[in-house]
Length: 139
Image (cartoon, rainbow, N blue to C red; front, side):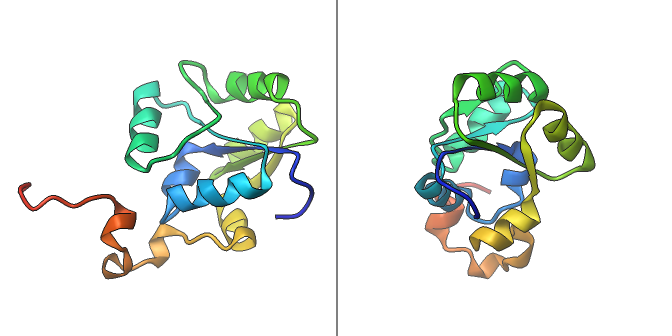
């Protein structure tokens, strides 16, 4: 990614779900971002379940608020030189512009940071430890 490390990076949950290895993405992003988190219109438990399943430690998340209120709040609470919102839709881009964040589509972010998009990975290529533990006792 271009720019300095004094940056707040927010992922729309849908963007994070498009990435093959979300835990690796967060680990990588932490090396060049000050704060990293997830925003979504989905209920808190959905975001929490996804981040726990993928062992993601986030600095912030939407909670019961919507994306707009969350991004405004994060910008106020975490003062950094840059705020970058990684999303998936034209609505995400419009929202970022509205609240004064830079916008980056997940595909461009993945290309710039060398992250793997899930759709480009064969099931056989995903290491069991990366995909989460698989259980033999489940149907």
